[in-house]
Length: 98
Image 1 (cartoon, one colour):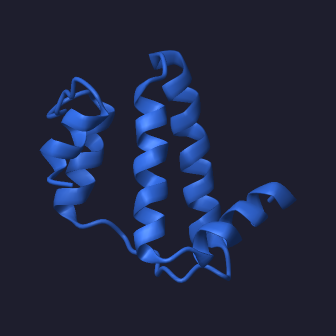
Image 2 (cartoon, rainbow, N blue to C red; image 1 turned 120 degrees about the vertical axis):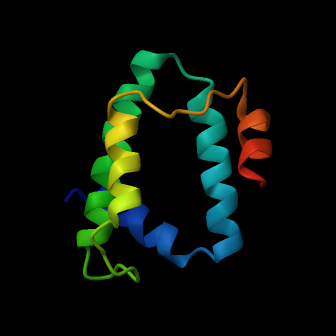
């Protein structure tokens, strides 16, 4: 794991839950404005970051095997099924109830 990735993980872990949610909102708003090609790359980067974060000894989260519903949701998403379309980040947050 690179030093920069380690520092990013440590930074995120030190934020309060409210600050973490604000960071996530900001990241999603930035991501939604990107062309689809960039989102694929960003999705891959986020997946790597998540995997590294969960594998980190410093991670406060327990990694769990997804239940049937969650696993099916992942499979559906990978197949492009049952996806909610949003016009923009505001629409997404409204649909999420945030």
